[in-house]
Each structure stands twice: as structure tokens, then as C-alpha cells.
Image (cartoon, rainbow, N blue to C red; front, side, top):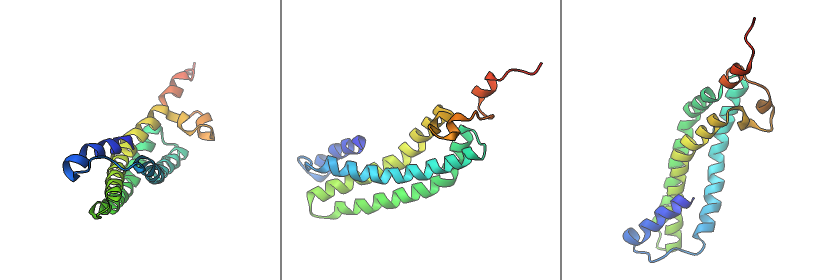
Length: 154
């Protein structure tokens, strides 16, 4: 959200000729971007969990989730960003600012946060990603950490 606000601040005066931003822009963009971003996170993480329950390791689950839901999330993000970008055609400055910031924020969330940050965090956290659920407690045989801790047969 702050990246979208920053990009908006850099663009508003040179491109649109606005001398400042609306006082409610931060709050409204926060509400919209968090609400919209959570949905995409749920799609991705639910698919990762399905793969983990089937026995896939964190890397395999993340890659499968990205392959299967990535297209849906990307197309939904593009459509949503385009929908909010339509607000930039209105003659009301607060709506132009809101539409631009949300459109940029949705695109950043869709292509950077979900693709890189969420999947990288889940791979690095390994089975701890599913805490406090059952998947976080049960050692997974495909994880290298667990294989190293098991004693070798004599």
C-alpha cells in the first residue's frame, strides 16, 4: 500500500497537475487494498495447503499453487486494476487519486507480493507456515531438515 501511495505521489503533480493528495486517500486505499489482497492470498494459500496435505514439500506445493492459481489471480488482478483505473477519467480529483493508487496497488500485490513474497515466505517457513494446525506439527518426510534428523539404519 505504501508503495502504491509513493508511486501516486510521484505521479500526481507531474502527470495530473495535482498539488497534493486528498486527506482520506491513505485510509481508503488501505481498506480497499487489504480487502482485495486478502482474497488473492486465500486462493494461493488454499491451493498450497491442498498440495501439502497430499504430501508435497513446501517448494513443490508453492510451485504447483503458482502454476494452477497464478493465471486466475493475474487475470483477476488485471481486471480489478482496470476497473479502478476507470476512476482516473472522472473530473473529481479525490476519485482520480483513489483510482490510480488502488489500480497500482492491486497490480503490485498481484504480481510482486503474491508471486514472490508470499511464496518465498512459505518456502522459507517450511511446515511452520501452517502453525498451529496439524500440518505444522507432523514431520514431513519430504523435508530435508527432517531427513537429516532421522538416525541411519544400522
